[in-house]
Image 1 (tube, helix red, strand yellow):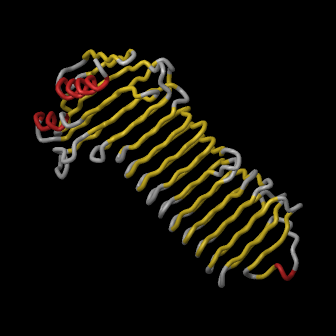
Image 2 (cartoon, rainbow, N blue to C red):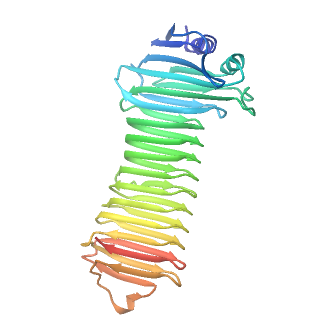
Length: 365
């Protein structure tokens, strides 16, 4: 049986039988067996459930590709486990007026799990104009999967919440109107969404994330040499904790917060409009920190033995406060709106430009 014919058989078995389905793959041949309860399970209140279990040998595979249709969502939980197989539990939750309506909706959902080259591909397919669109009916697909450690993961699916715990090697996620929680990526992370909250932790190598109208946070990041973490948001906050390296962060109308960061090299750039910027640095090496804000207060906490050249400017009506530091400066370099000077031997560079009536506070800790 070919992969294509199996995908068709899998859909029919999933929709018509509605039972726990154990799937095994050997080479290009697929077989399936049925276990569990036939038909949809009623959850009460017009809600029904159908569940499929699958196990696929992982030999010859090194990555997972997930795609979803734009008119269906749910939750995807992805973990890593034994390297000899991939295990998945696929649960459909359907909301309709009757079991017959729920069964009709289920028949419009195709879930395919098949190999393609060195990838395992999970596809969630529904037709345009599905029977739940524009109605009070509803469908969600919840997937819990365990894949081998250090696989690549590529996801292109909207309206899903992702909870992913690695280690993964390379991760790419494109989504909208969801949530991404991703932990432990060893080489490359690229997450892009809109109206999607993003939480990244223990990410190394090349790291980039962008969203809008939702919070974006990164914790325990170690970027590749000369490759800063790149974070972008629109009307959503950016929070970075325990970073060792450099970061570029840009947003507006929401704060940027960096805490317990070690800026040990490269150039960190922060751009923020009409919202506070708060940066706490544990270690500052031969690095550069550029902060550009408009109508935004800036709070900068630095090591009291900081070694850096400092240039701070604020707009008319703005103020500069510095304390807890020894700053070598001259009278012509110091005014209400300007501060230039050297801390220590001037090994790094701190350059702050806050236009408008912004207040900049710099404190040695």
